[in-house]
Image (cartoon, rainbow, N blue to C red; front, side, top):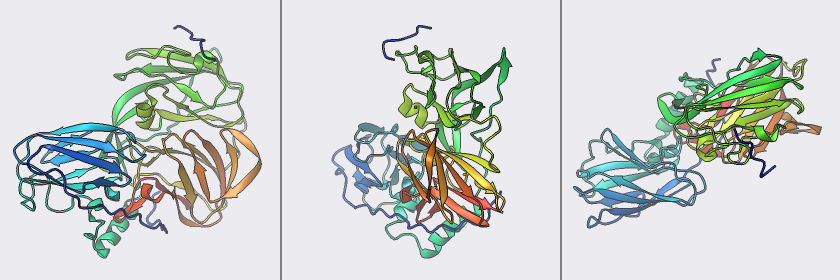
Length: 438
């Protein structure tokens, strides 16, 4: 492989949240008249404009979709059993969605990113006569919590939605990330084998997204080593596109930095690459992730924890890793959205160490109810002056280690405090979990 040196990423039965539901009202502007089959649609946080789109029956439709927000969105139309959907559209970008001729009726348009429809990213597509009977694929009802935000949801329905989510927590889903990966020893070198694949990943019960995984996991398996260890990571690419591996925050030789056409050629489908280095950094949390087409590949799940552990261990009763994610997988913690997130469980009096990492594309302020945690490390560097906080702003690429003294029994919510990432009128979703002290 050419070395490019031209240039030297429990179950819990009740969780109480004091969150204010974020409400986004959408307007009722009309779309194109029935004389044409082309419609302009704008997306933003968290609405679709126009909220009512009128289109002709019996002819194909073209939607010119513009994302005028900052977060990635999609636009989709549900017609009977067929879903017409754009790819993920970055903020400021545009694309086109073509839909086959539809019969008269009312259909649902919405953003398919997890949680976005719940927050108001829905639209009503009226084909043919306005106010006609609903199409086979779109009942006349709202079809999603987001479209009820204008007043279609009763107080009882809102309360029931919240209760059902809490009662289901922690809900079972297929797949789990952060499973420790055991190395093999070859001549004193710890060898870890990773395989990148494309997969369907269940983020919450019944919700599957197109994901990319290391060893079938999102986040990928946890790699744990000690200072001074000699490490070899073998990355096998079984995806349909090239990839590479970057050791984010770690000091590695240039040839192991994982940047395509700068430190290595990309790993083509069916190929592999060996990343070899000695661990020279201080104990703490680091990250490995893709550095090829990273907006898609990292956004879909190609990231994982690389923990450098002191030889005597960290010395805490409970240790947990929490990855923050957004984008194609929705708003997730360790690849799952509430109620499928897993709680951190401790006994009263335990010292709890939490590794926090943001491999998403947005800032997430993480807030813990009932406690002030001690921030002891940032980006793998121990802080000379640790500080106390209950809300910690974590930017993309940052890692923090925080310590909690679990003195107060109960289930304490732990969530992103950008409220549209965690709660809507129908209940909690997304970046919510809990610290459960028994």
